[in-house]
Image: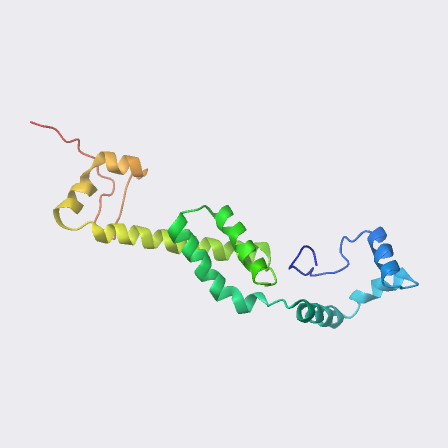
Length: 171
């Protein structure tokens, strides 16, 4: 395993010969060069990975992915944390539950998807709260748009787009 909870795709790639010699001594293997034959049969690696998973009581990521998505969605909705913090919490969540870690990009995509969904849900909730007169005043409010960092807004075709903001005056 590369680090706790993650198997290497190629178990011998980048492993220094000193490490192989040391492990061969611990496992009482007389000829450490025979380790290179380990990768000849791809099924051997999968069989050993399954035995290690079983022995250590590790769960495959696919079985825990839906539950992790709910955890990440909850963190994104409640805390407003950035992707790095949610990613780190997701790794901790997986380790606490003895789940094999997926590839970094797979976990990053899951976190990004759940964060985007939480952000979209927030904007939809805020938009729904703006009804009637107060909503129309807010959409015309130039300083609100500026504070939100938007130059144009197209709330489903209902908002401003390319129009200049009017300043309110007391005439």
